[in-house]
Image (cartoon, rainbow, N blue to C red; front, side, top):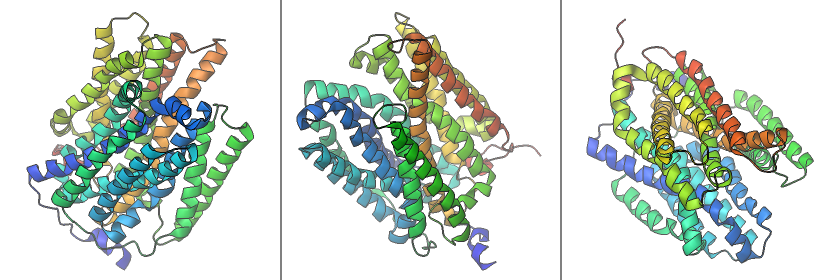
Length: 481
């Protein structure tokens, strides 16, 4: 019984002013935005990088996969590292590592120099994202969590939309190296702001020794699965290599599942899935993230390849989604207080899925105002759903287990967002092959958007299984019993 005593003990809520909460959330949000926009803006600079390195442009995808694989390997250890060394210290160090790695990326003189710098950048990103969320969760009370989490939702939605047009502008008029140099002032300001304003709230180190065997297994599983997802159907490597990557990843994941059941402090604690609100957020949220993860890939591709727009024109259209996401922030808390998590997630999830599917109606020459309006509303609903998922996931997690929850949540989040891109690309390739099109046509994009909307809609019945009073302490919504 001693092992569960901390979970049963009364928990002390942090007392923090609204101003302090907003400052903390804004600092972390800006830091995560730096990581998130960097992940998308680099894609537009790959051809220019290839020219600088005298490399085959097709080989430049390794600069993307090396970063994603590095993220995947190190994210599972983030919770233990934060518990062991302190979440504030680790978050600040992560920003510093990410910034230094960005400088090295900008100085790269060869492809392999760039890959090494991107791996280092992935280490910083792997600690920055989940530990930033952990810092915020430890800094605010449950009543403040919705407002705080709405700030963290925006980088995930705005970054992929702003990234491509920003990258296109920089590469066209300046140099691809400036893409990475932009991170330097943000990183320096971030380190100073964390030192000055972020509270040093430390939980008792309950993790014991780091589960090295578990870290090796999860790292192998994540790296292999990510490599499989990144190469499937893209003719980057022979298909037996992709199949072998999936086989290795699935095998390592299976072995880890057995290992975690026997280890007292596994690096990824799947026993958290017995908490209903956390499990619902993981399962339904994963489906929703797969759908949303496809949107930043499909929209620019449709506008540029299907409609013949320039990267800048495409960016101006897709910016409407970012504007919708920004508009959600002040509305999230009143809506959740009025309707509760369950009702909001069911209705809003259905609306968000419908608006993703409505993109199938877009055609060349269609009214720009109508397209922008639909993207604006869709961005609002998607952002609200993300805020709800990201918040209710922690509503019933004891404070002693928040670090473990952030590690598991961030790991699964990384997989599902990547899966969204894979499914979006695969649906396009399948449709073009089935209809014998040499290139993706508007009708092929329509099929992809309908599939994406369907995947998002599957999450709605899972949300409906939540109890009416789920997350009541967070939203302030009271149900008559």
